Each structure stands twice: as structure tokens, then as C-alpha cells.
Image (cartoon, rainbow, N blue to C red; front, side, top):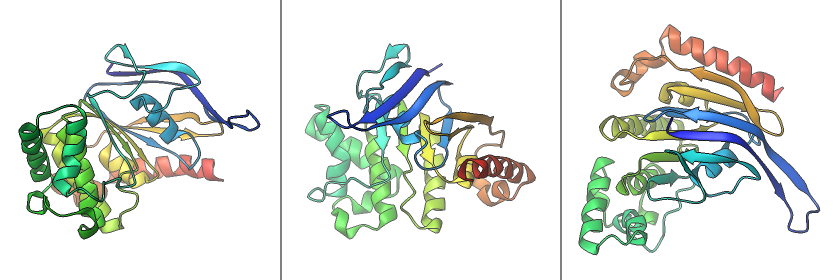
Length: 257
């Protein structure tokens, strides 16, 4: 297994210890290399906390995460994060934003410019390399975020509701763009979402969270043909897709009740 999440629990507390919130109960998961796994559940069930712990951005209160057998104690060059917020540096162009993590890694100037240009081309933004964020639409900004993640050539991609702030039409197009990218540049993906349809369309496996503190309430394999982006309408209207969607939605409604 590529990612091993072992008995992770986490609590948040004030600096003076006056208030404690238990975000995650004991969670254990194994995630296979090259798989696309969605974490799905209502707000406050610990999905994003677990994602950040797995990526090394948050230290768990208990338990450990191992990636390729190595304990996660912080961020690493083989992992990239895409956030819901665009998080682009306003004083840098699209190209400059994609170059930024490469710059932090010490990649030579000419090399990082070349890698950044290639990454922008992958997401169809090569003509907008010199545009600043305020001149880009929301969908274009998120494409820059994807290019920034793919530009560092990570093995693992952690995504925290990356399309949640986009309108429904652009969101569906971004899902297709992501699947196209992954078809030519395979990653192990851990993806947080609130959308049942998004989870079923993208994932090989949907892990549902619920309760307080958050815990795994269901682990569902999604057996739909790939590549899904080539005929996304047929996939989304298929009886099998509807069956998965209805089953997951029933489980989710019980958590929301």
C-alpha cells in the first residue's frame, strides 16, 4: 500500500487548554498506489483534518501516517496540495505562480521556467502565462493551481474541495480536465468533497465520514469504466452510476438528519 493511515485521532484546543474539540476519532485506512480516493461527508466530520495530516501539514494527536513505508512528519517534495481557495500570489503571473514551488525546491531558473510552461500547457493556459491572477477567471485560477501541483511532478496529490468554489458548469469541466491529466500523468489522489456526484464520477473508492468525532462509516469501491471523461454524460446517466449515487446519498442523509 502507498499510504497507510494508522489509528489517527486529532483534537484542536485553545492555547490555554480551555476548549477542546475532538475532530477525528481513531481512523485507519490503506490506500493503494495509483488509486483515486474521495473522502466524503458532512461539514465538521474531519475530512480536511485527515487530508492535512496525511500530507504532513498537521501533526496528529495520536497515530501515524506512512507513505511508501516512511513516517510522515511534514511536507515532502513528492506530495502536492490543491486547496479550495486559489491561493495564488497576486504579484506573480500565472507562470510565476507555477514556478514558485519549484523555486522553493531550488530548481534552476531556466529549468523551472521550462517545467512551469509545460505544466500550463497541460491545463490549456500556455497563452495566459503572463497574466496576473486578477485578470483570470475562477476556473482559470484553479487551472493554475493544478498546473502548480503537477509542475513539481508529485507522486501524491492531495486535493481539498478544489472545485467547490466554482459554478456547476465550470466544476464539471474541471473534473474532466483533472481526469485527462491523470490519464497521462498518474498520481495517487486523496480528494475531499461534499458532492456525491463528484465523488462517484472521479473516484475508484469513496470513503464516507460521519459522526463527531469523525470516523469512517462506509468504504465503497466504485466499479465504473475508465476513461470516464470520454463519455461523461453516458457514465453519469448509467444505471450503475445512479445506484452508487443513491446508496451514498441515503447514507449521507442519515448523517445529516
